[in-house]
Image (tube, rainbow, N blue to C red; front, side, top):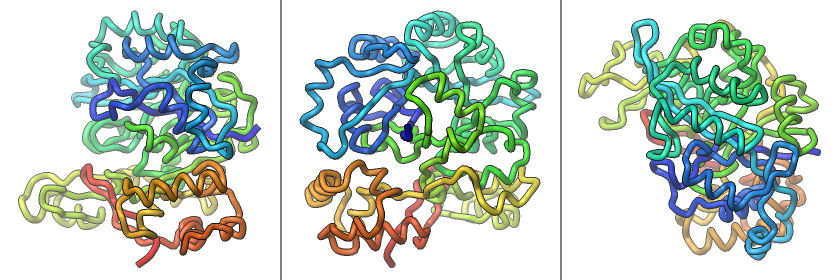
Length: 412
């Protein structure tokens, strides 16, 4: 079956996360977005793991369904057009801070496990290296290779996937604290890496300029810190609904099994371009070089963004056609906000959003797959035209930089 999976999210126990994140709201929002498999996020946190074990039931295929009583309480909030199968997959993000080759490294990784009981075993081991109860994304002061070793000792079915691999401050290739190759970071354990997460500020097309990533599956996830951000990036699978099938699809890189990704416009990501936010300075890579990496106003260091970092490590021009395909999207609330010229949280935008889902189905289906002619049945002015332009990449972009999101607008 074809389905969308968003493997990387956070719970309310992570810093800077919404307080309304619970199993119920994740289930409701995921179905409205069109997500069939959602990462639990934050499984290292004891409070969140307790809630997961109380509200979820193992389906004997490495995934978890919501208990019937909880599911029934949520059904009234989900339009009939958005109802369908839904599963959780155990995931969590961790941060490793350590010194290697004379430099402090700060690496974020997405951990994926086939069973919450195995997660409990893993957490007992990880507690020796950091405070798992203080943050949903804990910090461990050990080499990421040692983390990888611990995970595989607990379960040979587990996966470690380097997260948002180009983010300047906390990633495997980040300009501030990363490495120049997978092998430099992981050594002999590189052979067990099956996937990398591109992050919001990059897409597979950009990443394919680095030949060292050719044999690795490039996945995309939302890294959501609130329910509304679920599905802003996702992966398209064509497999049975099981942990083993999802892992096999990722390892195989077979486009019949892993058939693409849903992408943010990478320019909208908050680390896409170079710049210095305090001085409102946005720079192209060549401009950063011209200024010697210093802000032309205050002379402080420029934050080198994802585009620049990829260019530094690139050794080819990329593929003429990226395969599997990636679908560039703008969140539906952003589109409606632009059409109506009011805020995304306004009553008009929220009501229209719900009306559209009732009529056409889940958000990601509307944005990427429903025929434009069908969308013309909508009575919202410019709505089909907006979706058409988004799919054709006929948009106006101001890139994000130095922690500030960019903007992607459809109409002048």
